[in-house]
Length: 263
Image 1 (tube, rainbow, N blue to C red):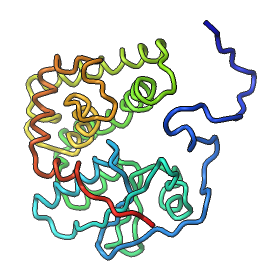
Image 2 (image 1 turned 135 degrees about the vertical axis):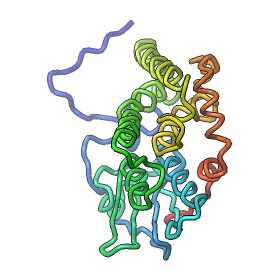
Image 3 (image 1 turned 45 degrees about the horizontal axis):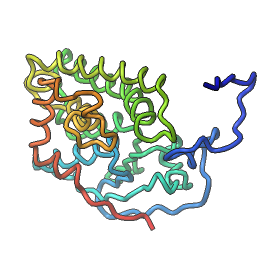
Image 4 (image 1 turned 30 degrees about the vertical axis):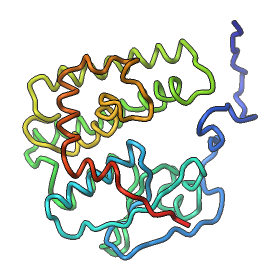
């Protein structure tokens, strides 16, 4: 077995292969001029149906389900495999070139928000829903929201990448990340043993954020196809919670919403 020896100074020389590798570069910023469409609705969402994107469409559909005014949105597809997230106008909204991006044009000047956790928090605070107001409960909710943001790279860029997308299967990274994801699933399963939702009896943005990643993996509706590999059906409390969330009409709509092309 060959052993990779890192050079003293890393240099970018060629694509590493595998899905998404063609878009990766060690520099940030726009790569081409772009004009993003803007609809007439209060909220403009530039996104894709990835777990991070689904978080926001679920949130918006939950707001609709609650009958809240002012949450109509135009949804535009940013095809990350074609590199549309590196266009000039998208980069102006999100210098980090990642989906999703929300543009709130109900206020002046229009407010861009990037990072899915930040968008969930922005919408929850703007419309005063799905986020507890009592300090202790609010703190618990935000702790779990940020837990998801901090933990999921082990699932997406870690296990999901090396198990599903990488050009070849490598034992070391798959074992390393599988170990951590099993720990995270066990954590959620134990946490949900005596709770209806992540933060107790009330559904919140923490549930939306965590379900979009871990709930989909647990139920086998994630593109990673990890249910058998991770034996997700053994996490009974996590499965119960995941199924309960997936029965919500707003979650079904948010997962299956249609996107408009940007061109």
